[in-house]
Image 1 (cartoon, rainbow, N blue to C red):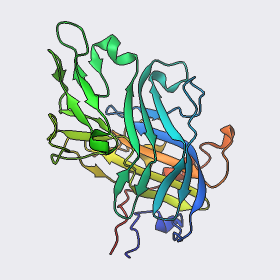
Image 2 (tube, rainbow, N blue to C red; image 1 turned 180 degrees about the vertical axis):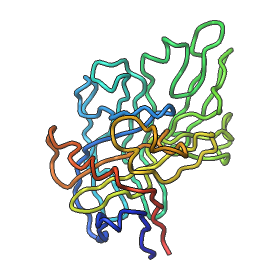
Image 3 (cartoon, one colour; image 1 turned 135 degrees about the horizontal axis):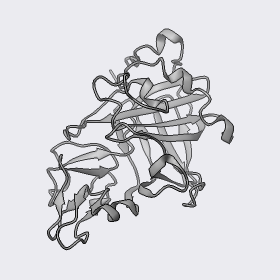
Image 4 (cartoon, helix red, strand yellow; image 1 turned 60 degrees about the vertical axis):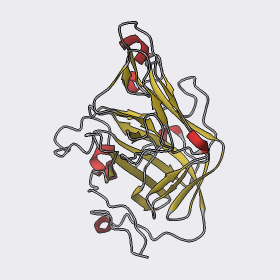
Length: 277
């Protein structure tokens, strides 16, 4: 097996060799940057009055496995509990294999918030309402029993956003799935964090980035993108936009320690996905 290549991490001693035995991990943060570059720390603990996620996790140095429960991560305007809801990602049985670069799950769905309807759009499906002012479109999740297979149906006089992508478990390109109505569309993954940014000292950060052009690709993330605040000046290639990440640790988190190591992320460079020989 080839060793993971993590630019800049090795130099500062943040990379630890994975072990074969799994370690129990606890979720500290589900983060993302929107297409505009806006930073969000998603709610999953019930503090925004949504159901508190019950997911449990194991990490064996290559694969993060949800061993039970569910994860519901909620995005809100203003990044505050009282902010208007945008979307939520709901997943069970999530497995992220950084060695093969794959994301699978038992089930996945994108839950539409109230913001979209007020603007005449469906955020999950990436469609705008037509002259009738109604949402005539839908997305079929877990199509054919596969959590990474979503099928969008643009109905009535609705129109697709540009680029014509919609939200799913993972990013995909023109291969589509199940030959559905929207089988050749591209998807923008919510939980395809297949790049290891930190795996050391009981801390784990997995991240990825969605192709803004709508080509369905994913890539490595500049570590500075994961720090709160503006992406201006650290994002010459646009990789901060649509970056998304998971932060976990091997100790039960307390609210004051959710982002203790944020400053360390500022010195991280782009990373490359772990691959097997």
